Image 1: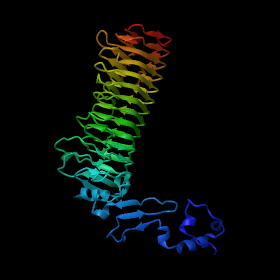
Image 2 (image 1 turned 120 degrees about the horizontal axis):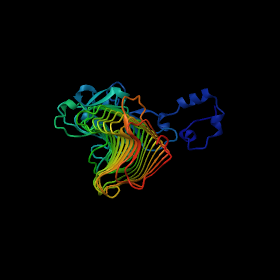
Image 3 (image 1 turned 30 degrees about the vertical axis):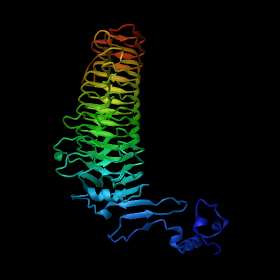
Image 4 (image 1 turned 90 degrees about the vertical axis):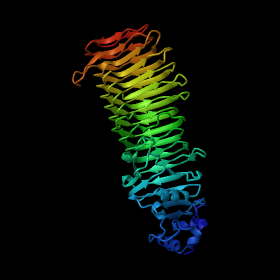
Length: 477
């Protein structure tokens, strides 16, 4: 055979030579098997044998077309991690991370229950690593808080001094072991603080004093298919965040069964640019979703698409700005479902001199909520809720009203709200009643109420107690 394969003529960066096309497959296989492994640096090389003495390092050194630094994989069992639900594996796991080059690599966690007594630093003890992946084997890989250990962030993906890029966690379960968290310190299973382009995918958390994920101060974070069960504070997000996030994506995440004293399923803010897509809350002690600000830190450009909340102690989706030094604007809630909540399905409320402006609620179903399907409330001055659209929503059996907009004392305003093409009907079969289809109280101003269906409500179809509101062409009124 006239073809002699070498690294150069097999390298995908080199032009494909005619010789390789003219060979039979058998001849190519024979020639490849004869190549000195040092020339191609065989795709898989091990830094030790695989009889259990040293199976921790799998270095994919140099593959066809790849001439960069080593890509490293570490198996934590090679560093002494037992995963036996009794031995503290914290140091062993951290040693595996520290053994990675600064360019990063992958830490593999075979099935087992790994006891954790202190945060694992994905950037290493010195905080210099990037592009580190933690890979588990689904929910057979469990991180469990050590007995008699107070709550701690189990996995820290960022670093406060250096920041990090490209940290990823995939396929693990975290148990907060809450019975041992006697001091009540609030931490989350995963902390994305001070990270860029980090992701958490296909993970499950239970019994955390905080919840699943804290993403304050993160940039370009992605959280997908993550579940938080039996959380104490919030399933996702941290109260009192001092650093805003920038560009947050949450897909198909779920919270369930917040414990006594818990607050919210999802706590979003402060920050800019967030998408919540197909996220769900079941049985939250207080609210399902909360969008909020902190003093001097605003929230803007948030889109909630196809989200749902059921059986919440307050509201399904609460948007509130309690800080006069912060702003809130450009919020969209679309295609959601909010039911059986003790306050309202969707609730926007201002406070102080803090504005909430330019938001849209559309294509949302709100049924059997105690006070209202959609509630727009402002108990303070300066028109804190304004320039809003409520359209194409299905609102029934909502207690006070399908849509309930009210100002506070004299001079407090809800204004310039467009209420269009909604269905506000007491369906008579939900086991609950609805007093009014649309209810505008005093100090609602310059609102438009057009082309809404209002039927079967027990007290009135539309009540207008405001000023300069335009009401027309509403079937049933």
